[in-house]
Image (cartoon, rainbow, N blue to C red; front, side):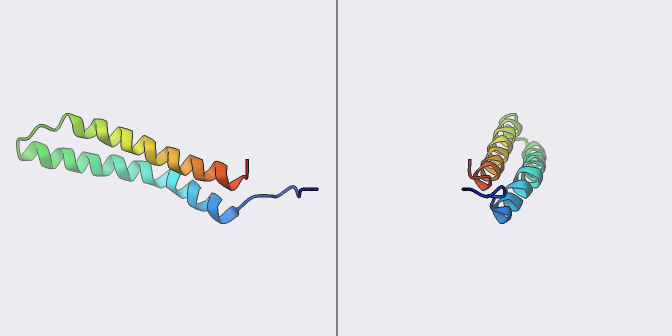
Length: 72
């Protein structure tokens, strides 16, 4: 018989904070990098696109850790 709380709470906490805090940090880094490239007069249209995709990937990683902590 399995218990009702079959969760890894430490992994859940790590996944929660990655999913919550990392995507805005990735967006912020993409904004800063875009501004630096614009001031140097280099092409920068692709930096926000890559930043958005990277933030989505980081969020998915955090979500995956959350689901892994539930042992499903």
